[in-house]
Length: 294
Image (cartoon, rainbow, N blue to C red; front, side, top):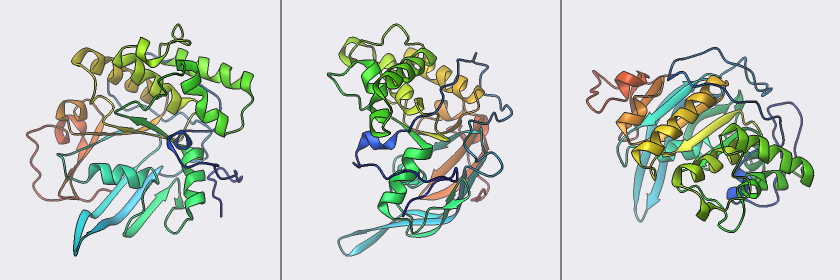
């Protein structure tokens, strides 16, 4: 069983590893100037999703069996993300934010509840169908970069296109354009050990963007960066937001969440706040009562 939100099927990936979690061939847009964290009108990326929420989560629970006990990682989470939004999911360790990210990225399934990605219900899909959905619409940026040490920046960025069956020359063109977009047009042939941490993160972002995903998921993308390169990384996310990308960024750092236009705060597997990042992302935020956005 396959699924496509664009109304045409795609073959399931041949392997289920990290390289299969990035996007197939599409156009790569040009650069934009940052403007901080303000909301802007959505610019369509030909995703076929602009008329409906990208993410629609309703009363989602995720439970795990550990020995003879049941551990509840998520307890009735509801949230909705519209096309073009830039949202931080913030919370302390153990709050459920990583579990939620895995569900949003179709890397895991809820125990119960509903998750619709671009209007398509992902519950009950086969593993192959979920893999196709990830490849079609989701780009991932990881804290640890997950780059191939012996491959150049261009080859790291182009790897997802190999699985999409893109011809070699076109892969090179698209990888170069994606690296140019993140400010690394002069680093095409550099390997990861020849780059700074900030540059390696930009390569990881370029890899996630090379196929213009519908949704960009970033898991603690500034966690391994110093304060200077952290600011550079956030500036890049602002630029991507201005270009119309839908971004969900997971962080435990209030200072990062406060820079995002919107923040959703988790605690003990529940949504306890959803609103302006400057307010909900603050370390001093204390909700009057638990809220369920969506």
